[in-house]
Amino acid sequence: MARQSFLKGSFILMAAGLVTRILGMINGMVLARVIGDEGVGLFMMAFPAMLLVVTLTELGLPVAISKLVAEAETFGDKRRIKLILALSLSIVGTISIILTLAMLVLIPVSAKYMFADTRVVYPLIAITPVIPIVAVSSVLRGYFQGIRNMKPYAWSGIVEQVVRISLVATLANLLMPYGVAYAAAGAMIAGSAGECASLLYMLHAFKKEGNHLFKGKGRKSLQGSRTTLRHLLGIGLPTMGSRLIASIGNFLEPMIVSHSLVMAGYSIKASAELYGQLTGYAMTLLLLPSFITHALHVSLVPAVSEAFARKSYGMIHYRLNQALRIAMLTGGLSIVVTYSFAQPLMKIIYDAPEAAQFLYTMAPFFMIFYFQAPMHAVLQALDLAKAAMINTFIGALVKIFLLFFLTSRPEYGIKGTALAICFNVVLVTMLHAAVMFRAIGFSLILKDYVRTGILIAFSGFLSHLLIQRSFTAMSLVPRTLLLISLIALFYALFALFLGMIQKDQLAQFLVIGKWIR
Picture 1 (tube, rainbow, N blue to C red):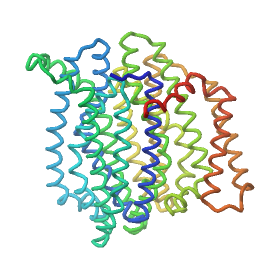
Picture 2 (picture 1 turned 45 degrees about the vertical axis):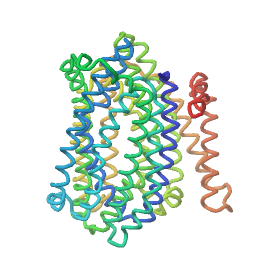
Picture 3 (picture 1 turned 30 degrees about the vertical axis):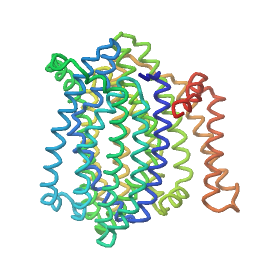
């Protein structure tokens, strides 16, 4: 059974996540050109509803599975691993079917009351069949995370995006004659097909590595189900609460924004277009490094759980500092690129240069966002998921208030939505940090943050000079790619010079190629 170290597992997920993000951006480019701003707006209005239902279905079990499987794996307790998987699959399978049927019945009736634009009902209905599929695959991913084998998880995301891209243009074009809402529904169906392919791959991987868990022993292997169930829910429910709060906030966001923009004087069509630019275009670029922070989150939960069980607080501090340094470096480069090249990136990727306004507003705040996932992972591993849930709840309440208060004011409009999102990011991250510092006495390595600030400032200044004076005779696409490559190279070399990239991290990264051979 393959098992990777914390850094190697993280880098495997980062490499796969980068490929997945690039494929996702290609999917976004295709989608934007096929269904336009209005269609993307309808697509993004429906998407939070799917996230909300999936959160309810999972009950926070993927994190619980990862933590409990990691503990059981430490002691070689295969019977307990079998219990964890059997109970988890039973729970999410049952709940997902119930919620899927409920959505199919309730969506046509309730959509006209929840959304200013009732056309969103079509993409909402199109997304419901995927709920049981996502639920089951999430349990399998939790298992592989727990045994520290990140390869199946990494490949499943790539498979999903490849299938999605293969179908999205075909289905959207096929349904476009019936209206933009049907085209958005076609894009949702393509996503469902991608999730199906991902699940099939996960099942294939599990058959090779985990199927032995279900051979023999019969009922005796299921003894202790109540205790295992209690442990699963004890970890999963607070985690679900945190995700549920965030999902409810995301679910309410398009409703609040659409109504608030109408109050501010925007038309329904303009509201959908602006919301599509903000969430479908700008947020996609700003969240690009989240595949790195997500990889760190996935790897940190079992790693910190093992260290916490041994009361090895020094190792917890070491792992967290590793994660924060990686998040800070990659997030800093993302901020420099998205801020400095906002207009050309929006033009090249989405043919919507006017959406660059959101990057100028939000990019500086999102540096803090990249710390949020590693901190949240540590809180979950330290059995502080309840505190993380409270932090998320506070952030969601403030965000909902600001969404309405700022967006409904004509002088702010859609920029008020952007500011509300940024304030939520900063507030929740600061609350997570406060809880973590109080729990384990964690102290920041201040010189890392000073050096990163210097790195970002110099890189941003160089970006400005290059944009103004270099390669001006070249066309937009090759010039932008060349300048970004030069900035990334300078950023990496200067980071090495400042000592922000360490030899052990580089050595781990250089051996990633072996896992795909």
